[in-house]
Length: 382
Image (tube, one colour):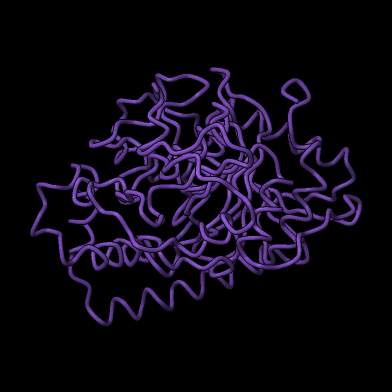
């Protein structure tokens, strides 16, 4: 069976009911699990990852193991070993990463639910660029057992689907908790961040986002503009070091078995950090988190464009763009707050644009998303 967009690494059952595409980072008993890597091309786990086991026990069938950025370490799902995941709206552009196959397969109709991970935006980036819904829960709400780590203290497990309701239902299964209920739009307040200082939002992306904000106001949401602090670079360096530590047994010793862009990032993580630097960066992180909580104030959610730019061509240099691509999404990994992206329009090239709602509390964010999804979506695309 052909797979022109490279959605799958391993196909299973794409004809069953309640089909789930599982990112090939999660263990599946008796089925090859590569982590998107040449190193693990023949790895066959004995047990299921906790997240997949919970979905399977709820009646979901495995459509297949979906393609991803190697080791989940990238924003484009350009994979040197299993092919680049193409965007289903324009195969000449990337689907986004790292959970690219888990988002693209929703649009192609290969499955109704995608299981992904998100360390700096890896659920929300491909969901936004593919025009679907992606939910990153509160850190730790869904167990990551049986899933290859990237940076354990900011790794999140969550669902991707065509609508908020399916994500909310899947999250209830994944987190083993009651399903969230829709909020009353007139009771909601949101702070609006149109862009971060020093991170430009492409004009047509900003236009689509602004139209979505107008529809929120029409739905009864109280909004107020605010600024938001960028993630301090020292915290990014700690994340790089943590990723390098995860790979310490195979990198740099087996560097030739890593793709060039992932090897470059791991090498950056090997740069030495003194204890004093680490302590300073931890203090900086806590101060930054306090500043974010202050900016949220009494609002339930902060609303931002999910990604500042549209999806680039499949031959893009991912390393050169990644800082821009995850500038908004990574904030909520380090805060640990839940965050969801919902399609709100299209850019100048007709590619999907996402609106991101984030805040403290899974039920708060999902409740707002359930209530506001119809308002957020561009009427022309419903």
